[in-house]
Every structure is written in structure tokens, then in C-alpha cells.
Image (tube, rainbow over all chains, first blue to last red; front, top):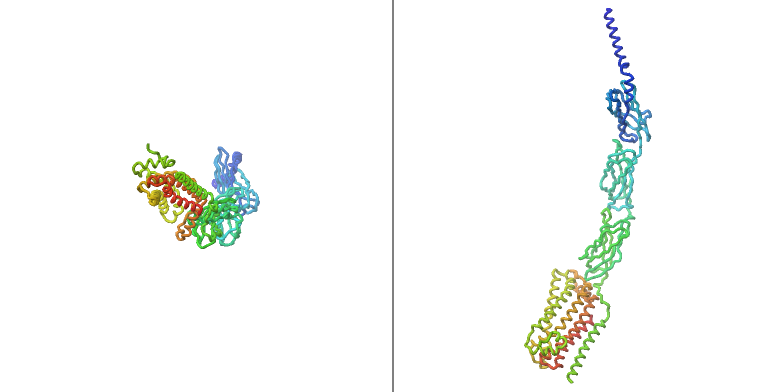
Length: 390
Length: 222
């Protein structure tokens, strides 16, 4: 019986020793020194800066700088005492061995819940053979949105005419945003292209965007710029008014110095076309309309492109019967390919071919010369004959 | 010693006295008229080109027809003129009881055509100078429906200042050289038809003076 008691006591002592031994055995000065060489070597957040409500990933990399000793970490947590960042997932309870010179990465899913600010969540890990390691790295909450700017747009629109609008997408944020898409919506306009994929926009970068709009009625156009900050969708909207009217900068070809001449039954109309507008008039063409019938060689005269304040000459040929005026059509295209026409009536008169009677009057000199030569001839012969007779 | 062609121009009496002693030969007169005809054809080509340009659009091939007509008309017309002038002189000389064959008249009229070659050359040079300055009206196909348009176009063409000037110059040249030829023809007719100087002068002078009066009248009527 005594023997059993002795065995039981010995077993109990061994059991207590076994429980106490690890703490007493691993928490040695060496292990504490080794833990001191473990540090947080890198911290990154995705997205780089959060917008309130954004979720993202916080990544902490722990490096063991010891060259001969491994360390065991068994509890990694992230928390924000200020409450601006909430950790959704990623507390690491399991033990992990970090070998000498090795690193181990801990990731956490976080949500920014605070307003614009800087915050410092606390990362901590526990060592098996030493105390804890704490690290605080700045995380920015920045609610600055992308900027959608109208760089150039028409002063006024015309129903059914296509116009180009130039925009700029700017990213004033400190981090890149991705999947930037510009969408258009209106119940009174067509857009080309229907939407614009901009892609990624780096921090402080500006990307030009242009699209064409063909309005059918005066309805504002809604522009929506969708983008992702990390994996969080955001959008910026802009309303663009569509007002029909006269474009103050539009090209304005004006016909002048019009002269009409009829040669052999064909009317020749010549003149100049001046561009009195502020934009280039492309493919300026001049032709005659009914009741005139365009004839070769200049059925249609292509003046070409006219820059502002530039001018070109034209000549058209046509036949026309029983009319005193003929409509002359002047057409041109704007930079978007829209065709604009203007018609001007040109008076051709009821007379037929203009006969230039030269300098006019009786040709005294040649007739007198002819008569003188004839008289000399007759007189000479008369004299010759009379002298011969004698 | 055979007379030279230069003698025709300045000593026609002596020239024909020598030539008509020999047998009848139309070879040299025909060559003179042919040369004049070729120069006239060149002038006709230049004028025809303008007309062809004016009427080319009226119908396909019109320009070719006009050019051919102008060239052939001038060439053949020269020979017709030779024959007609000889005929007129011959017929008038009948009234003066002239003797000598028609071939002799053809021969002297042919020789007398020599100044016309000089006149034609000067006319050709004037045409080359003036024709490019003439504004040619171009008739459209639709002009066929309206003869008044064609008439007006022709009037516009003929009244072009350059055309008027060219016509006046060529008319004066034609008068001068026609009278020079007439001078030669008078001596030629005297020898060819055995006429007195006075009768020969009337045979040649009357039709030539009438022709010149017509040309002067045309000048005034332009």
C-alpha cells in the first residue's frame, strides 16, 4: 500500500513538473533575445487609401532576423482602438514557426468606418517563448472622389446633328483606382460610343475622354463615372445640359463676289466663299439647284476645307430656261461630319448670251486703210495706162 | 536665160514675156497654188480648232468634222479660187476679143498667186499671235434646241476683241496682197490673151476691185 502511495506521489510530482517545466524551460534569456530580432518588415493596405465604408485587405509581414534560431508565434491580431477601422476577419490563432531569416505574412479583412482621417490599427503577435510584438502602421481614410471635367463642348446643339464633347477624368486620390467606366444616359440622345472604358487611373493622373452625342430633343444628359477603389464600387455623376441653338463658334461660309456670265448657252457663275465662322468648314461644295441643270465642266465645284477667315473661289456651270433666278447651294461639313446647307438665289437675268461688241463704233482705221490702198492701186494703174497710151 | 520667180513679183511684164514664149506648163503655177493652199490649210486648222472647241459638246465627233472641214476646205478652196479667178478673167477677156487658151490664163493666174503665199504667211503669224487671246464660248448640248443660242454664241465668238482685231489685220493683208497679185495678173492676161494693157487691166481690175470693195465693206459692217 505504501508502495502504491509512493508511486502515486511520484507520478503527481512528475505531472506538476511537466506542467511547470515548459514555461520555466522555454522562456529563457536566449529566447527573449531571439524574439527581439523578430519584426514587422512590411505593411500594405489594399486599397492604398480607403473611402469610408470600403473593405480591404491589410497585410502584415513578420520577419525573423535571427540567423540560427526559429521562433514560434501563436496568436496574431489586428485592432483599432480608435474604432475607425473594423476588422472583419483574419485573426490568426494557430501557431506558426518562422524559421531563421524567414518571413510570415498575416492578412486581415478590414472595413473603414471612420470619416476622412488617418488611423493607426494595432497589429500584435504572441511568441511562444517570449512576450508579444506590437506594430502600428498608418491607414488613410480619404473620401475624395474622382473628378469628371468637361474640357470642351459645343455652345449649342442642333437636333439630329452629331457633336463631340471632350472630358477629362482626373484622379486626385493618393492611390490608383481601376475599372473606370464612363456611362451616358438620356432619353433624347444617342451616344457614340455607348460607354467608354477608361481602365485604371493612377494617382494624380488625368485621362482625356471624348464621345459624340446626337441629341433629338432638349433633355439633359447624365454622365456617370463608375470606378473601383480596391474592390469597392463608387461612382461620380455629372449632368450635361442640352440646349438647341446656334453654335457661336460654328463655321459660317459666306458667298460673295458672285458674277454671272452666259457663254454659249451655259451659265457660268463664279465667286468667292469666305469662312466667317470660328471653326473649319470642311469639304465646302457649290452647285446649282433646280430649275437649273448643272452642266460640265463644273457641275459641282469643291472648294475644299476653309479655315476661319480663309476664302476660296468657285465656278459652276449650268443651263437654265425661263427663269431669272437660280438657287445656288453651298454645303459644308463640320468636324463631326455633319452636313450643313445654305441656299442663295442668284439672279441670272432674262437675257441670252452677252455679245461683246468690242470697242464699238465704225472701224475707221482699217476701212480707211483698205480704201487708200485700193485708191492707190486704181490711181497708179490709171496713171500708168495714160502714160503708156501717150 | 530663164526668168526667176522673183521677177514675177517685181518685173511681171518681162517675166511673162519670157515664160509665155515657152510651151504651156501648169507645173510651177500648180506648185505655187499648192504652197498657198497648204499655208491656208494651216490657218484653217487654227481657226477650225477654235470652232471645234466651241461646238465639241453638241455631238460626239463634231470637233473632228469641223477640223477636217476647215483644213480640206482651205486647201481645196485655194484651187477652186485659182480656177474661178482664171475663169472670170478668161470670160471677161472674151469681150475684148482675147486669144490664147484657158490653160495659159490658168498658168498666169497661178504665177500671180505668188504674193498670196507671202500674205498667207503673215496671216498665219498673226493668227498664232491672236487666236490664244480669243475667249471661245462653249455650246452645251442643250443649245441644239435653241438655234438662237448658237447664233448668239457665234456672234459672241466673232465679236471677241481679239477676233475683231485679227479679222481687221487679215483683211488688210488680203487686200494688199490681192492687189499685188492683180498687178501681176494684168501683165499675165496681157500676154496670155494678147490683150492691150487697158483691156487686161479691166479684165483683172474690175473683179478684183469689186472683191476689195466687198472686203472693205465687210470690215465696216463688223
